[in-house]
Structure formats: C-alpha cells, structure tokens
Length: 296
Ligand code: AMP
Ligand code: MG
Picture 1 (cartoon, helix red, strand yellow):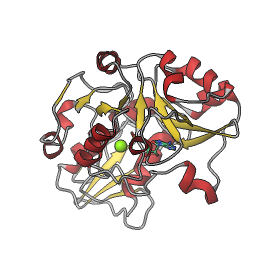
Picture 2 (cartoon, protein in one colour):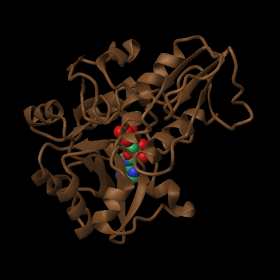
Picture 3 (cartoon, helix red, strand yellow):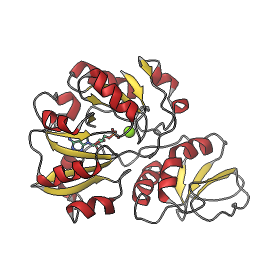
C-alpha cells in the first residue's frame, strides 16, 4: 500500500483484486466500508478485464478522455472483490494520465484501487508534504511526483440503461463530456443512495470551520480568513487570505483549492469564508468541494 501521485490528487494505492489489500486502504483512511473505491488501470485495453459490459457512450468517453480525470461506473467482473465496490455489482474505473501512477500500475501488473491519500472526510493531498503523518504510519511508502496538475478528484459518470449520469463533478468539465455523449443526467433522488454511494454531504473539510460567503455564519472581520476567487484586490481586515485564481480561471482554482484550504486552516482563524465560483466548467467541481467542506 503506497501513496502515489495522480493528476487529480495523491492516491493511496493497493491491489484492487485482493480483499485483504483493499481492506488495508479502508483501515488506513478510516473510510466507511460503504464508500466504494475507484479501480485504476494503466491501459484502455484493461477496461474489459474489470468491467463486464461497456456501453457505447462509455467507450466513446474512455476513448476521448483517457488517460485523464474521468471515472466510469460499469457492471463489474468477478475478479473485482465485493470489498472494493462495497458490495455493488458495478465498479468505478479510471485510467490516470500521471506517468508515475501508470508506471506503478504497470509494475504491479494488476489494477490498483487508489482513493485519495487522506484520512476520511479531510482535505485531499495535492503534494507529498500534505500526506497525513498518522495515516502514513500505516502505509508502506510513497512516491513524490511533485504537485498535482488538476488538483480535484475525477469526474464520475455512471451508465444506467445505457444513459450517462453525472455522479460527481470533478477534474473533467461536464461541458466536455456532453460534447461527446450529449446530455448527461443527474441521479434521481429516490435512487441516489444506490447509484451514487459514498457522496457524503460533509467531506474535504479543514479543521477550521469553512462557510460560504453569503451564509449567515460567514461573518468576516479580523478573526476570519478569506478564500477568494477572481479580482486581484486584497480583502479588508482579516486573519489571512488566498485567491484561488486572481485571473478568474476555474482550472487554476481547482489546482490551488486544497493547498489554499490547508494554508488558511493554519492561520488560526475562527472561520474561513469562501467565495463560490460560477457554476460552469471546473467551477462545478470546486463548488461541490467547497459546499461539502462547509456542510456541518
Ligand atoms: P475517491 O474517494 O475520490 O476515490 O472516489 C470514490 C468515489 O467513487 C466513491 O465515494 C463513490 O462516490 C464513487 N464510486 C466508486 N465506486 C462506485 C460505484 N460502483 N458506483 C457508484 N459510485 C461509485
Ligand atoms: Mg477522497
């Protein structure tokens, strides 16, 4: 079990085909058993080895965007144990673009499960300096691949009756996905628990309470830190501030998000008051993470 760089965030990687190795990941992260893992492959040809059925839309997306920050949820083959998928008959699969991630998967010779390398519910690491020491005490090692290029987790798309459904916004923009497969749906509320498990409302949180600008609890002032987006001007009196992207670029904001959340977590503020981005492109993923970080 090793922490490895991927283009999204650092992952805690172990064999996806062995229950005992997958259980080590759950233990090290303190991750609930009902939150399934993503299986990582090194080549598109390995997809048929883990998924029993690949609808045409899924194939088109894999061809267009792999390697990259896109995860596909498909019916699983028996070689993937129930521990990996939390008992579901589907498996989430991704082919990362990071050369180190792919080299490690190739060297292992089997697909690797690799959730974000952080204790469950906390901020994901985007460089090795952010790996949690307590968690790493249970891990065999890590590979330093420098800072992550994308900075937020993959976009997850499921296929239900052949139709694409957005299960989690992430590092690949919905607009790009829709340019290949047409309109992508959202999970129906009544089925959401089954088709999109592990989407915890509270997640990615710093220790300092984070509140979204406009929330009644988002009180600004000398004891509050500010996480801004766009506009180069410094805020008024505050405990510290960062700008996710002074130029207003959502991809830059995604790359900076977790590092800046950590930096503001360290200034000793009473609260971090965060701006939301426009809900388009990678702004959707950044907003999803900010909303979950603010959920309490
Ligand atoms: P991460 O923790 O970033 O590695 O992402 C794992 C997430 O992928 C889980 O929390 C689920 O939301 C999603 N996921 C994994 N497997 C499945 C599956 N079989 N069906 C639906 N969603 C899944
Ligand atoms: Mg995670």
